[in-house]
Length: 121
Image (tube, rainbow, N blue to C red; front, side, top):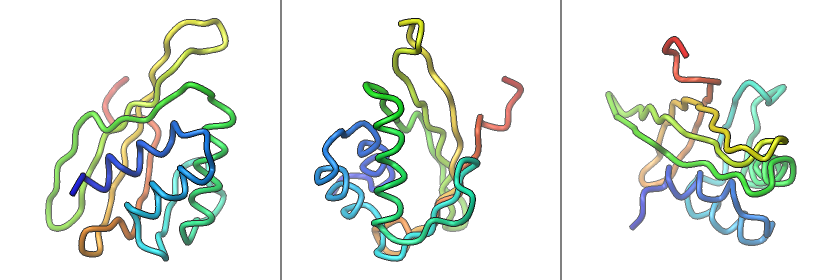
């Protein structure tokens, strides 16, 4: 079985809504709770999360999200994610985010994301 966290972030580059939903559904619980600085409130459920990820795909075509490292302590996983692709000037760009993730069995049940990694960047 593949890592659900990597599987979830693989969905961020998919243009097909059906493929994106299938990938996200395979990685998260039905009642997933998701927050990051761009969500005005907690997103709950695969439909809301898939719609949100679809906005990333639409607003940043060709960009991807890749887990660059992760660690787990006391059942919480911290994952650093690189979001990258071509910027408006045609040059490659990378933006980092950090997520704290709770699991329910083999599926993600809650994610809280932050801009950057907390280090001086």
